[in-house]
Structures are given as C-alpha cells and as structure tokens.
Amino acid sequence: MLSREERITADSRYYVYSPSRTAMEMFLYPLQCGHFTYLPGYHLSRESFDSFLLLYVQEGTLTLQAQGQTQTASRGQFVLLDCYQPHAYSTDVGWSCLWCHFDGITARHWYQNIISRLGNVFTVPDSQYSVSRLTSLLDMFSSESMIREPLLSKYLTDILTAFLLYVPSDDRVNAHIHMAEKITAYISEHFAEKLTVDRLASLAGLSEYHFIRIFKRQTGFTPHAYILNTQMNTARYLLKNTALSVKDICFSTGFSCESVFCSTFKRREGLSPAQYRERG
Image (cartoon, rainbow, N blue to C red):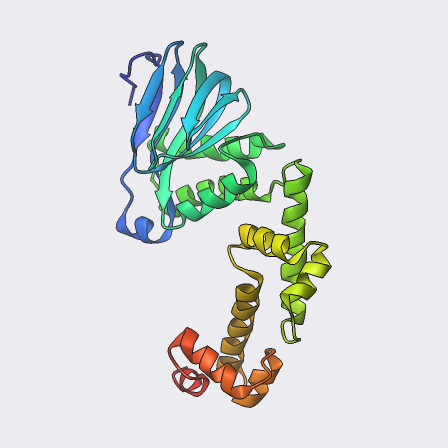
C-alpha cells in the first residue's frame, strides 16, 4: 500500500500482516513493514504502539526520543525500539529507511538482550547481512508470493542474531561479555565441585560485589542461581537417561548431602527425584 501520511513521499510503500495463531505462539512475526522516505519537518509521537520497531537508515538523519533519552540516527545505522513505551521520532533534514514493526513470544527477550549491549541506536560492521534479510522480508510481501511464516520468522531471527553476535568496541562492555562467557564455561565443566562465588570472582579478577552484579547483568542469573540451574538440568538428564541411583546423582551433580539434593529438587520440580524418574 502507498503511504498517505503527511511529509512522507507518495512513493513510500508499506505492508500490513496478521499472523496466524501458530505464529503468535511460536515465532517472531512482522506486523507492518515498509520502505519510507520522510521529508524535512516530519514528526511522530506515540504513547504506545504494541510492537517492537526495527529500522535501517539508508539516507539522512532522524532524532529519536525514547526511555527519557534523545538520540540521533544517521545513514548506515540501525534503530531498535520498544514501541510499547512512549516514543517519538522526527527529522529536520529528511531520511529514508527500511522498517519493520514486529512482535512474538520471545521478542522482548531479544530486544532487552540487544539493547543491553548495543543501545537503541547502533552500527554493526557487516550491516549488509541484516539489510539483505530485511529486504527479503519486504520482497516476500511486495512480490505477492505465498507468505511462509517460518521463513518470515527466520529473517527476523537472522537479523537479531547478527546483532547479538556483534561484540561492541567498548572495551568495558567487551570485557564483561567475555568474562561472563568464560565463567559460564567454567561452571559447565566444574559444577560438580564445590564452587563458591568468591572462587568464581577470583577467576574473573573482580571483587565479589562487582562480579555478582556484572554476571547477573550478562546472564540474567546470579552466580549461585546459574550453578543451581546447571546442577538441576544435569540431575534431570541423569534421572531420565541413566540407571544411576539418586544418591550417585546427588554427588555427581555437586551436592554433598542426599537430603538437601532431594529437597532442592522437589522444591524446583514439584516432585522428588524418584517420582520424577518414575513419571519418565
């Protein structure tokens, strides 16, 4: 469809899509997407527009207001925005962009992880990869071909994955990311040992306070919770896939007392280890 908004050129096009129930339950999916050219003086302000917005600036400059901040996005930059929150964008010089409002069952998790690393406005080294996926998404609508929802979801997932894989040049952010990756790998190898937060903080070269704060920001869990998750995931696997006794599983997952293991497992799973195995 051709845009009829003021201060958007008449050749600007957009497409509206209604996802199936399956897509809403499983995938990321586009809601509206388009290719717009905005004229100088354009301004939009909204309290809410239930979706997340991804746009790529091809030419010009826009000013973005969101989450109490004012930022500028220029040619070659991406913008990722939570439109559930109040937001506004405008331009004095005009800009053109590819854009897509999207949502999905995991959309907020993608959004939060990406902006925690890159912010709402960012540049990535190989932008063409993400731009090509966004273009392919638009092409699927403009060509009037069969709409394949798993493929739409793949295009969006490819774009967001590329953003997450990019490690920003900020030395501090870079160091925090690598520290969390190093410690989670260490926990995966040594969770059956007696791991303490103090020991992990020492491996990270940080004070215990700063280690806990940074680790939680990068993983979403405290070190203790991450270790416990690893122990429980391993215990569930061993209960379902081996003939090891509950006692052996207790010690092989790092617990020093069978009663503590059983009570912890039941609190987490709602079943004792024996009941969990029987229901397998």
